[in-house]
Amino acid sequence: MYADMEAKVSGLNTKVSGLESDLAACRKGRAEIDGDLALTKGRMREMEAELQSAKKSLASSKASMGAGSVDAASIASGFAAGGAKAAEPAKAQASSVYSSIKNDNLQIIEGIGPKMEAVLKENGVSSLALLGVKSTADIQAILDKYGDKYKIIDPTTWVQQSGLAAGGKWEELIDLQKRLDTGKTDAKGMTDSKLEKILIKSGAIKAFKQDDLKAVEGIGPAIEKLMHAAGIKTWRDMATSSVERLKEILDDAGSRFKLADPGTWPKQAEMAADGKFKELQEYQDFLQGGR
Image 1 (tube, rainbow, N blue to C red):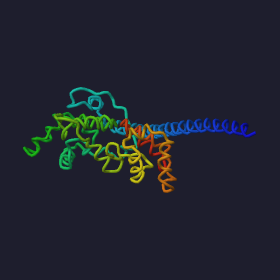
Image 2: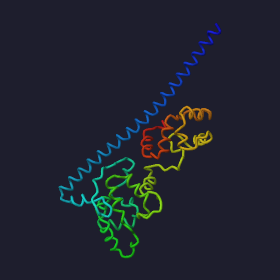
Image 3: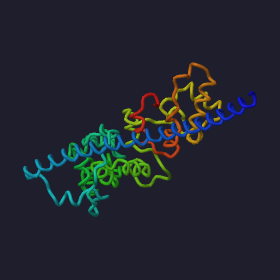
Image 4: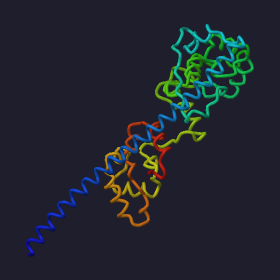
């Protein structure tokens, strides 16, 4: 009888082990599905914003054309660097991250500060759209009116930058600005993007140092210390760690961390490690404490 019972217990232990493996796989699958769902919702929100923006643009264009104030030739020739050649019509890439950027904020352009913005507006260049259809020669003519005061300023890239902004091509604008130095193309290496600085200052996007585990929603300073002590020190370390391993670290630290749920942490860390910060922020918008 004892031998029979031992055999049954062994069989049950094997069955439990198999069920635990299945449960872990289900949890992992659910975390991935939750992540995909969050990204899909974020994309739907972007598309709704694009639709609203397109409706507003259409209404504005109709109103302007009715007033006879739209010059089709100038629109067709706009948004090219220096006005040298026509650019393809830009597809709006509206996003809630950039919704705080106003069309009359010329200071998002690398090379334009408060004084220069005032000069441009004094001369009728009151918006990014208007700046985008000017030529470099037009802008230089405005600067020349003020004598030697602005002689060292180089507006060569302003039309290109404002064209990208007016077209809603924010990521392309950020990429361009990282290759500029105060608006000039003679940067010796990658620089900070002025638009990113403005967005960080306004709180529209978050700024984290490389491998800062606190970039993962649900992780604060105390949990970050726990992870470091357990050898998880980088985003990639976190991304390649199993949820079960993270729960084990939290459980070993005591009841203080009992409510922490690491179910989405590896996925968030993977996005950070891959530099997908826009996707990460969209994902985090649908999380509550990392869940």
